Length: 176
Image (cartoon, rainbow, N blue to C red; front, side):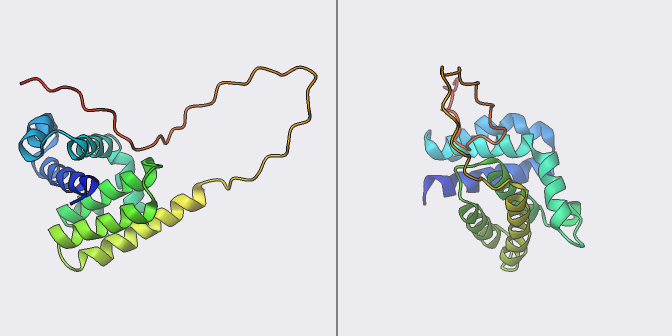
């Protein structure tokens, strides 16, 4: 199993626990990951996914709810709801994850951990989110070439991209 796929499995399992047992469960993330996966890329990316998804949970839930016709997010199956949160985080916040990869991985998570029908349910919602997201992004048009200036002006500092790549920071050393 690829490390990012494994990381998604771990992240889903932990998000499921938090959803059922409450926010205080978040404190157990390090212990959970230590017990489930050896140090490496999968554990680091799983931590990134869990922390990012939980941090953006309110806005992710709003986005999911806005496209889920006739479905209240609180009434969705717990696994489906958390697969949608996880995949929505990757779709909306991770520039380095192609949208189709995030959606296909989510469909497989739904089929594996929920029901066979979950795949099409998850696909439909994530496809709507992807389409809304792509429509909301301004189209990049080529800028006209600037006229030559007599003296080069200092370049302004680039603005921080609010949607940074979804590459997790290196895992901090864990204390025994």
